[in-house]
Length: 259
Image (cartoon, rainbow, N blue to C red; front, side, top):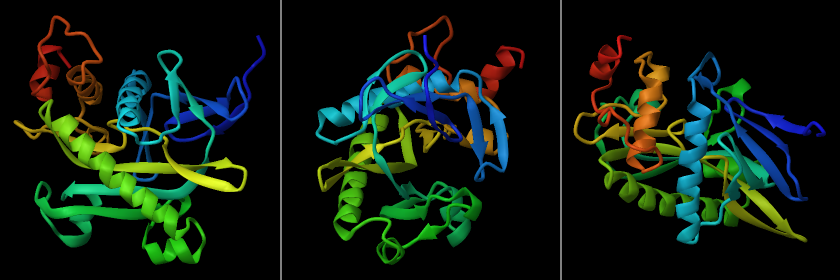
């Protein structure tokens, strides 16, 4: 069997040439990074969990008419996706004050925002993914005005859907990031949702306990990253209920396991 041609390797995923023109294979790694790759580590099994969670969410979004690059899951770590021209902008949707927003504006973490905020960041690790405005995007030609409107509208629609989805399983959607890409039909480009949606790019807090069920556990050296990702997958119905009950108190869970 011929070795697949690698197209790109990022912090959490590898892209390989797909079986048909216009497709790629997206491989989910266990590598974990934070603070623009200044902190690096491994979360065992993360790639498998993120593959399943992202597949589930993208499938549901497709069912409500949100266009995405997702075609189908191939195996435990890989998805078949449409090849897109990535827009070099991260779109961050915030419902609750946390992370860099709290630091920038001095707002206590956990405060519900009066309205949802959509922010833009320029994708460049060397620059620290700086926050930018619509004016920057338009000035430097990273996206057109129509494309910005499409991305913002899609981000709000995804937020509305995910907020309800996670609330239904007892999880508060604090904030999350999205990436978008263009697909071309001759000279006409269309914006679709790309990358992934998983605990790597979302802040997810248990509604009852406030436990963090996302990559903040890695960023802040809280431990229990695997259990947190498993818990999100379990509540979404992607992991069968095992002998252990749902993990709500991660510290107690680790103590029971002797960690």
